[in-house]
Length: 302
Picture 1 (cartoon, one colour):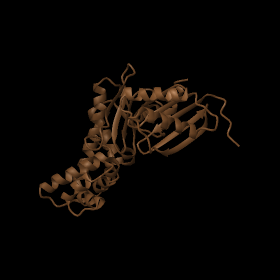
Picture 2 (cartoon, helix red, strand yellow):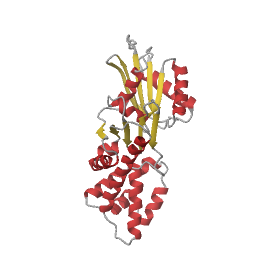
Picture 3 (spheres, helix red, strand yellow):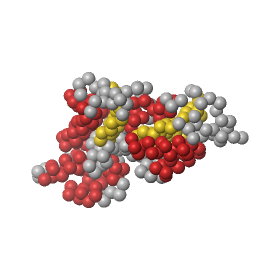
Picture 4 (cartoon, helix red, strand yellow):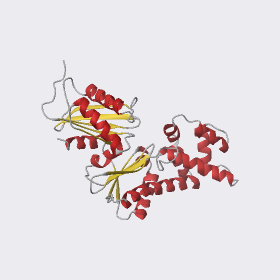
């Protein structure tokens, strides 16, 4: 027996993350679908492919015969307004419903129930987003593990290795951070960490999974690890400061991401650094799934 389509307007929100995707559909307050799948196959730089991927996701997740009244998507690696608009236009053509597509970090503020402020994400990578009083979106950070993503898991590991190399060059014996990294990367000496990092095929994921080593070393008393965490926190606060300098309201900073929320040492250091960099900015952790932000954006289209 097939499910009957909902009688009230059906709003659909989608959070396409780097690793997993969540779709949530509601008719009024009733949840019609709550679907999680891997983000395998997501190609945001190919407009047609992205629209096909999202269309298939929506049609697969909804009950038979159900059609959304409005759809909003927060999309990983949708990095510019033009890119997001192209996917939106293709998606609207495919599904025939009002749609909105934004970068996935833009879901953070509406997911928290706020209508303005900064969404700061520090998970595998890091990025901060906000909107000018005109409504135009501004994004800072998020430049990938090789050159950016300070404060994210991969960036923490990169900077930890750099700190260990510098300590090695000074003639110091390996401390808890160095020993932890040697074990994590399965190499026998500090210089060999270079090959281990350069040999990664999926850099963000392969580097980032070792971030717990940095926090464990800090807990064991490693001054190097503590300095890496402090510098990461300062870098995250600097993202908010850049948004403020460009005119984005930053009174409220909603913080999300498994690295910063899962590691109190980083969150506390970020809060302290933010107080210094942007007095008056108030950080608070996101306690609801980002997909709720997509649902809120979809409702705004009705």
